[in-house]
Length: 507
Image (tube, rainbow, N blue to C red):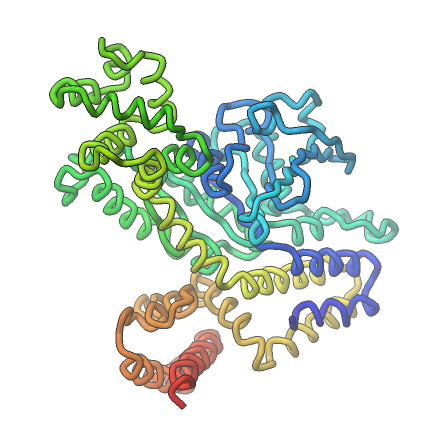
């Protein structure tokens, strides 16, 4: 990889401190993509983390652990490590219920974060970082989150320019951030959601979160009142989809998309929480008179207090796992197919949760372009490390090496990600229609989506790619500002490479 080669080549030409930073960048380039799950308190982040991992390990109730950043990564032995601010580590077993212990038995003011290692196939390709809810927790929790993810901005200590070979805060934060963000919102996107998402600049190691590396989910979609959303026609999921589209227009260009999801149902169906006993209890509910059942499903209180053959404790357990929407969906599935197995019912609930769509989008936005995202984040880290150097000659040496790297044809993907970031952040001002085109070309992995022609035949895609390549080349030469011209040249090349890619199988 070109960024890795740059780091290897420069390590012997820079100070020990900068070289240590390059070593960390190299380590991160070889590690799985790191995705931070972020959002406001009580938005259901930890529940969604459990669903994505497929195991109920992240505590969802307010406690010590929910005030700390927790990194879930692959390991050959399941274990929990408490990492202290002074670098010490303390190993703990998981609790009897398989979760991280609710109480750690240490002074959490001295804790940096938690590392959770799991023998889980999902984590072989992606490290998931669960963060404390922003906005309502204590300042110390938010500060720990920002520092670990690199969002906190630290001024370099001028008195510490010589001496220790360890990374200073600026450098450490530049290389410690996650490379991608999954941002969790609920029904209303608030102004401080925008601010909180901006605070996760660290999700790309000091680059702005944008459509290349950030998506959002509208969690707790089942709690949306369909009558409150125009065009929903009384359908909860349709209402959630419409609302997610509106939220996408609010949060773009910071995110690629907003997708509805029901984290609670996803967690129960995917992590083993839904059992055959639950399926049997739902069968008993499905046998009730429809008028009675519909009355019970009006509210949680009525559902648990109504006199019926299903014990109240059993109904409470179902409510905790599926909520009223999930219970209603399962009962309907049983009534439509009385012989449905517990496994098939679980799969039906998983489908209803919307988790698969989120996973597919994660795969398109993150996994399919993980190398490019990581390389862009690594390049940003290298830039930040050079900027933090006290040696002007060292700064210039690294800057020149980066310029040489970006001039190479194989660095096109990096240049495209950089151009996308510049346009998305407003650093380069573009007319709205051209900005949308840059975002579309740069933030999709599918060729049809890149060209704005999903499902179109190859011949039409090829012709359109070549036409747009010519247009952007002309725009770069005639009528663009110098900043716009740099972006236009990158987009021109992107279209030309797409054209080549479409034609290759036919040649």
